[in-house]
Image 1 (cartoon, rainbow, N blue to C red):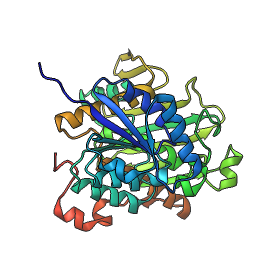
Image 2: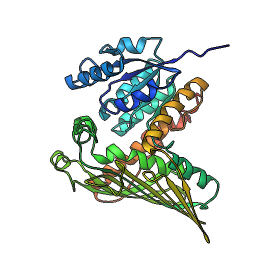
Image 3: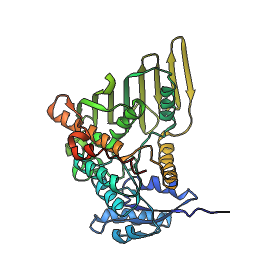
Image 4: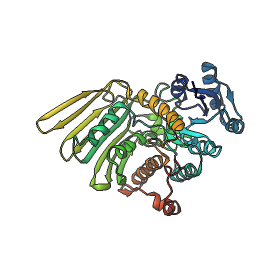
Length: 370
């Protein structure tokens, strides 16, 4: 009987979402979490967060990132820093030959996103980012669309709205959303990844242009920092598809869950709606309405399946569902949203061909090496 050696995992920083991801990895029999690392020059609070998480879970903590990345018994890195360090830490791990999962957002600038994408394309390790495409509701919606239940998707409306302010229960530290030096933006930077990724996943189309309006409507912390807490976007996608996204944080979203996440797809032959906080998928067709019950907390299930599936991707040497190209596309949309807000008019979403023409001409992709 043959046995498979466990995959050794380490965290690079543990200040954001690490306390949610670590228990999932610890529960997996074919994984061993072997270290939590933090950069020597990181703030004292970042080192304290690492020590607290390490003590609570009996995981060693180190500030020697170079030594950690050189270890042969660590194959996979999970980047859980504040957003502005995501790209840099992920690139360091990839350069060391590790497989990498980076928390959202993929990066906080288009330059960083492009650098990370280019690093992924030449690195030997596999790469993915945290996403919600494995949530049961989104997975079922994709299956229904693929089965032709609504025909060709023509119009999509998505809402991603978090409840409450930036308390310790909602965000580890308010600065991770409001301090530009740590967050890179407000709630659009914090949340827009999810609806943009959902749009692209369900339609197979890219966002071509968008118009965004946003402001600080509800919370003094956002207003004082000069970042948005709420925004509305209108998008034009390939193949004539149109979409709207409402995203942000409000005192109370229309949901019992922490996040109100809904989607409506109007197709050429039918209509589909999902609500991730209410486990049901509804499909309307001519003379028929069908409600499909789906169980489980969408966010928790998505996190679990991203990590579990990525471990399988590593073992089976296959391309993850979400690649660096997908991550880059989310940052291109976020970048366009902020440009549109500043210009007060619609803007084009830049493509890789425009930002990195040399990469486009080579025809390279992060799937080509798998």
